[in-house]
Image 1 (cartoon, rainbow, N blue to C red):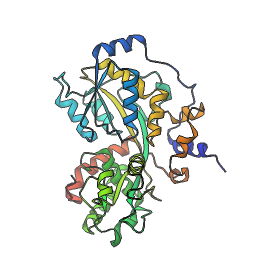
Image 2 (cartoon, rainbow, N blue to C red):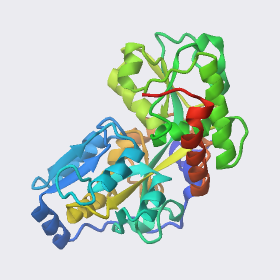
Image 3 (cartoon, rainbow, N blue to C red):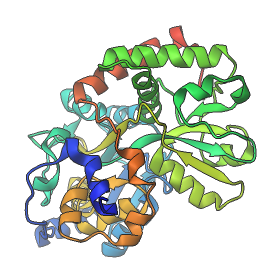
Image 4 (spheres, helix red, strand yellow):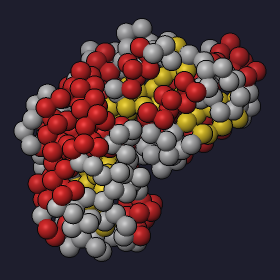
Length: 368
């Protein structure tokens, strides 16, 4: 039988790179001094219960108390982050984000539009090549798989797969964790449903996912409400399609009130990668670079793992025996992840175009 950590490592077979010695480089004294002189870092769209970000931000503040962290719009989606850079190109005030954390498809888009500046962190070589821009404009930070978060007080029979959600017993119970016209999490939730139908490439899977959600809406099972821990607890959204790390974090927050369950579907197991980037117009570019060094350090990467995410340097950290056993044990059974599909950037882009362009026409539900 394969050991727990070995099986978890199998999750990333699609992303494995040649092993390198674990990086131990620290940010330079010059960078730290320049960042302290700027005195501020402006982030956007980082809810504290998303991927352990609360503790990750707190550890940055503890490490660099001279730098104030200005947090904008924690509940924004990836498209909102890109728009915030555009809207504040000429604004060096507190509404201009220095850094963004967006879905994989949004990184190349932002680079193409001239909204990012390149920077390679000191642990650059341990980020898999297929989830980073060769020039350093964007780079993968963490990933998870799409799951179902279920309120067990209201849902008698826990759904095990996407097809189950179409059953009459789930009438008025199924929600997405964002607006599929703007939220990366919701856009990829549609892709996961499409992959479960057997569709292969991004465009076909996106269209199949739209058809699925159209049927779900027509059946009266889909709720046009953005789902989160609070809406699940209130009973407003008894079942939410969300990243596993969000669902696990919500379950921890709710602490059994109500009882919940996190299900990795038996088909359409979609793995999704998020990426970091520094705004080309960042008012605090050195603080932004220091933030990136923090995120890609052992400390930052393990901070995300504590938030139930798989950090992008997971393989290198595991190889160097730097991952505490309790963090591995807190994740869902590795067997649930063995069918994980890592879509190509082209598939993610094609799916995004299909979903954002076709949602209103095919599904017609105004999610808000």
